[in-house]
Length: 297
Image (cartoon, helix red, strand yellow):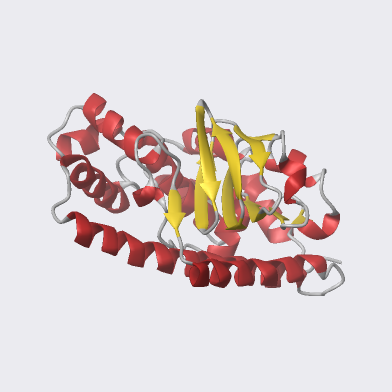
């Protein structure tokens, strides 16, 4: 099920249509047997544990873990303990972009090995910190008559992402300190990401990055896929989409100018790219952003 399909299965006070769905502990059991795909999924387990299947991989998640997944393969919830207390947060790309406004908190991919999904270990205090942020988000979603409901939800989502990002940064550094010298794959991965952040506007071809790293494209793809669970092109694509979405907010900048800034050969190629990955043409996306209600009645 996609995020949009899941939203229809839960009370209206748990979501903003076409934006975000928050499944709180009292409703989490309703996910049993369901399969989620094509969206970003955050899971925070406070108590108990659950078993889930991601693609062909089955994993058990116990208390005091945060999971952050960009889900393309189906995620199925197989079993949940009786004492399970967990949250499931599903923001779509538009809601994330609106809330963060170009900010890039750390992600949890550093905690993903080749055989597992990204699991961020927490202590009980850190788990409580994140659950409080989700409680605030839940409260804002529940306040359906609040004039600034959407803005409050964006604020508390941003706060959750910043707290999670802070924890990830500290734990990533601790892992690096414990590991000492990075292994070869980690070095390649870190260097690739730095290159993407520097050149993604002008260089969309994976061969360029492989050449810069003195690697074959096949080897780079293997390393990135093992570390991130997605292709090098998907990393470049996500950067382009985030920048394009940010630029489209400014109605003074033409779609033609955005296509040029992002080094597409012509505007038609940019429009095709954007619609393929967001479901909306640049013009439709801009129109939707401009006409989005400032409050939720």
